[in-house]
Length: 157
Image (cartoon, rainbow, N blue to C red; front, side, top):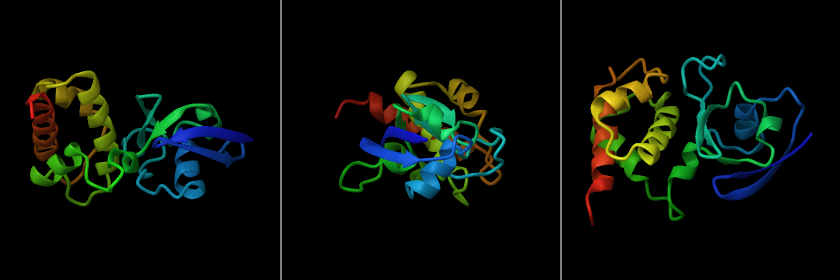
C-alpha cells in the first residue's frame, strides 16, 4: 500500500504491507532510527512519535494508519542546522539520560507536554511522563530536564 506522509517537515512516501508498523516504516524504510523499539507492545514508550501533534506509540500503529498525517520523530526536534532542541540540551544538562534507549520517546512525550502545558509543574510532568519507562535514570534527571526546558520557554529572551 502506498502511504504518503510528512515526516519531520518533509514529504515522504513508503510502499508497505498493511501489517507493517509505523515504527518499522520509519526505521527501515525511511532510515529514521531514532525511534526505538523496546517492548513492541506499547508499554515502554521508547517508540513514541508525534502524529498530527499528538503522542503515538509507533510500534502499535500501522504505517497505513498514518497515511496523510504529519509525523515528528526525535530527529525532527533539531533545527535545520543540526543544533539540539532546548529540550535535548536540558536532558544533557540535567542528566536526563544514561543509556539513551528510552530518550527518544521521553523527548517526544516531553515535547508534546511542553507544547500543551507550558511551564508544567513537577507533578504534572511526572503524571504525563508516566507512560515512558526508563530503567537507568530513576526519573529525577528527566523531570528536572523537562521542568528546566519548560521554565526556559517561559523566560523572555
